Each structure stands twice: as C-alpha cells, then as structure tokens.
Length: 161
Image (cartoon, rainbow, N blue to C red):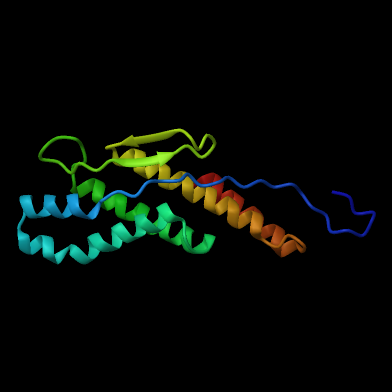
C-alpha cells in the first residue's frame, strides 16, 4: 500500500464466482408428496409457499438481479431448504420426493454434478452465498475508511457463510 504518491491505497481483494445450476421442478414433486401423504386440500393450501420456494430457486439458477438481491434470495431459499429437510424425505425411493439438484463446479465450469440429496443443494446454496458476499465486498467503494470496513465485513461474512 503505497501512500507516497498521493494515490488511494489499494489492497488486492478477490471474489469467487457463483456455481451455475440447472433448473429443476421442485414444486411438482413436493406438491405430489403432500397430496399423497396428507390431502389434496393440504396440497392446495401450501401451493403458494411451494411456488415461492420454486421461484427462489429459479432466481438462483438464473442469477438475476443485484448481488444484494441474490444474497437475500439465497438466505430465504436456504431457510426454506432447512424447513423442507425436516418435513419431506428426499431420495430416489418411490414414496419419497425425487428431485435431482444439478450444479456446475465454480472453478471447473465444464464439470456438472447432479444428486438427489438436499445436503448437496444446501452446500451449493451456501457456496453461492459466500461467493455473492465476496462479490459484494469487491464492489464496495474502498476509497475511504468506511468502504474498507464494509468490504472487510462482507469478506468476513463470506468466510463464515
């Protein structure tokens, strides 16, 4: 960090790119499970919630919007996955919810992995949350002390995601 020339001191900071994901039908299998194990009325009652969860995932896969918006969506979707995990059995079993979550490696984008595993999905979401926070940190205006503090805060959040 050279201060002698009057230039703004800069520290090199790097951001991580998000994983790319493939769209999957989450709403249909969850609704089908509710219908089969509870009632068609219950399936209708939770339709809006299932639509919201499916919308959050679609927003993550398309990675549309600002990094701050993506961060908020990642958090909402992660919380929804935690709730889904306790209420719906996800596996290839005939009586379970069979949803394949597919993600591309962030560092080797040609490598694609798909699993019927909610922990795999949660790990990908947490990775993307950390990556998004690192991108927010990089975008912080580091020309003054407050901007540097903000960037550091987001990098710390990224490391703890």
